[in-house]
Structure formats: C-alpha cells, structure tokens
Amino acid sequence: MTAEAPSKPKRELPRVTFTAEDIPEIKNWSVGGKYQLEMEVEQVAAEKDRYGYDEGKNQPLTATFKVTAVKAVGKSEKENNPGTKKNRRNPNELGY
Image: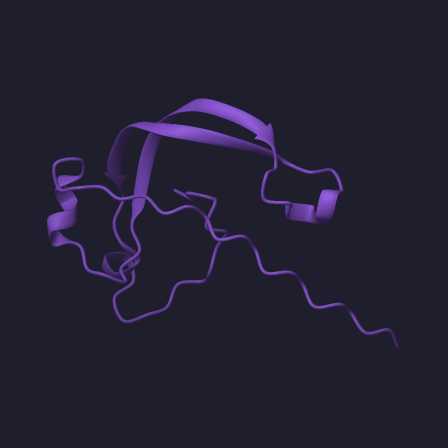
C-alpha cells in the first residue's frame, strides 16, 4: 500500500471590499453569511504566475481585473436553508 502525499492547500482567492452604495443589500447581511454576487470585470493585466503556484510545472496565467460593476443575486445560504448546512462547493463557481 502506498501512502498518498497530502494535497497542497488551495490558494485563497483575493478579497474585495464594497460599500452599501455599491451593493445596497449589504445593509441587511451578516458577517459570516454567504452571498452570491455577480460582477463585471475588465482584465487589465496578464502574466505568468508570479506566485510560483504549481512549482513551475505548466505555470498558470495570472490575470488582474478591475471590477466595473457588481450586484447581488439570489439569496444567502442562511435564507435559502435556515438551520441547515449547505454542501461545500468550489468557491470559484457561482452555481445559480
């Protein structure tokens, strides 16, 4: 039996900050709640991965984006499933 190497932790996605002027719905949201946003972004740069992700093997492209529009879509997990835990999904997928 061969031991499997522990998987590498996934890189944490960037954080963004919005105001109630950008997304009025945040006035009714709670810290720790999970919400779906739809964003329009403009790509402003691209380069080989500067973070050294994947240890030089088929290094992925790193792209930089400027947020040009944002809106709330759908409801929070708490509103959709009060009192229950939702199955974890890939944080990169919106999953409508």
